[in-house]
Length: 100
Image (tube, rainbow, N blue to C red; front, top):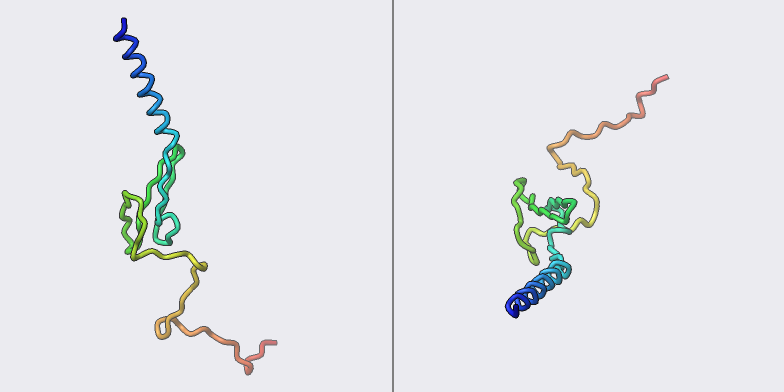
């Protein structure tokens, strides 16, 4: 009879420890969540999948990143870049041509 009581108490303590661990989980903040090159997918039950898209290939990141040499902050919105010699020159309106 005493052993049954001991097993019940141990089971209650183990269950309480598991509940405390489950509810006190701190979500690790990773540097990837603020990076331009990151692809972050979140699920409905708290799942999170992070991948790096730096070189065009999606590489899964399986740990919390605190430093990265390829980290890039989204400071401004993306802009169209015109490179001299590769893009056609914009056509202008000439003053000599008047359409009536």
